[in-house]
Amino acid sequence: MAARSVRRATAAILTGAFALGAAACTNPGPAGGTGGPKDSAVVGIAYEPETLSPLLGYGKDGNSKIFDGLLAFDADMKLRPALAAKLPHISDGGLTYTYTLRDGVTFSDGVPFTAKDVVFTYRTILDPRTNNPSRTELDALKSVEAVGDDTVVFRLKYPYAPFAERTVHAIAPEHVAAKQDVNTGAFTTKPIGTGPYVLTGWSKGEKLTFKANPSYWNGAPAVKKFTMAIIKDDDVRATRLRAGDLDGAILPPNLAAGFAADKGKKTYAAKTYDYRTVTLPTHHPVTGDTAVRRALDIAVDRQAMVDKILEGAGKPAYGPVPTDSPWFARGTERRHDLAGAVKILDEAGWKPGPDGIRVRNGVRASFPLWYLSGDKLRQDHALAYASDAKKAGVEIKTQAGTWEVIEPRMKTDAVLAGGGSPGDPDFDQYLLLKSSLAGDGFNNMAWYDNKTVDKALDEGRRTDDPAKRKAAYDTVQRELVKNPGYTFLTHIDHLYVVNDSWTSGAKGAPLTTQVEPHDHGLAAGPWWNVEAWKPKSTGDTKK
Image 1: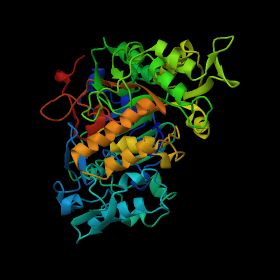
Image 2: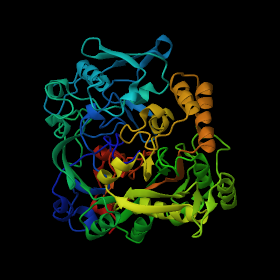
Image 3: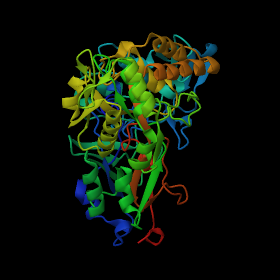
Image 4: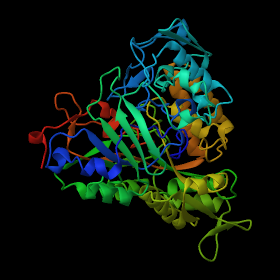
């Protein structure tokens, strides 16, 4: 959910190397109009990972750049072979997945990649002693075995339909990681992988720097050095992009709009599963009341948030599943209905006090709502939500803080959170809503407890029958109407502004974006395939 889970750990990251200002300023290239093709880039991102170890969750959704998975997602989010030579052979009624590995792959230290590295990675993740908050995502996995050096066989406990998508997970080298403490060893910050880039430095809170892997199995990248500047404040990212310190950045809509007239830059909009939501903790006397939850769910004006905060770059959210997904349960849309919200609260005994704020049995309808410092989108969503709630007689006190401040308060205090994962509905809903995961880091932040939802989540992941799965996830979404443990607000498009200096490498084709998860600007963005970028010639670049 929030940017620090696995989700926290994943903040699935990227590539590159170079000292920050230097890459953009000393080697200006075509975008600066003063030089030949450049082979380095610096981009501004909002979040930082907690670890770079796949064993702790980094790279679990693929595209980590330091590492590869057995499979990877292409531009259209379709699975393609990566460390595997081809897509898996599925047998035994969906219980056995057999992968044949690619020949000639080595880790960046020159040691050959083999099946034992795959076995080591998955077995270590499943080990309860490993601090991986996403272990439940591999609940279906019964065993993983190597057959020689070039074949891996996964056996499942039950036919888990999206298992192949789980094998985009980054693979760690046994010869390095097995010799260290999995949770605290040097590998967590100084990783070695098979990916297109090699980490050269990580200055916590400042930047990650990488260089191209010259022996990468799919060809050495043309962008030789890549830096990811960690700039949590949206305004600061925009300022540094305008000053030339950055070659690209993720920005909220209002700040991205400021670059529309800059002919040397392009704006890219990525469709996403990324939502903004308010957690309504069960352990708070106000947010834990179902009537208050239902009232807030229809008091909020989602479309106004899309129009005014996102400037149209998104859509209303009624749950974790976007309305344009085939998994969305039609009829679960909630219209803005302030009168209906007032009626729900009146009937539940929440009566307006002298100042207009409702009270029941001496309890004032008031609660805190935290949002991440420096995140304008979260701040704007929080303020708009509080304004809508006040019209119904509910007082929400918005407060900014770091995750170090917010996390200890999540059991009782509401949080303006984010989440979302493309692909299978199990990926996001299980971690978000399963009652047994309440209090497990950033999983189930609202401590949501609904037995019908628990049962449906288990049914959805334990069958590969499409009709049964659709019915299960429809049930989850309809239960969220009856008892919304979260108020989902918007699904946001991600906007990136990038110097118009590169092509995607395919005969001068423009840069592209994928359908993105919540963890954005890291392994996502127009640089999702930076290893395939080629510099534009001076004549092709806008001045």
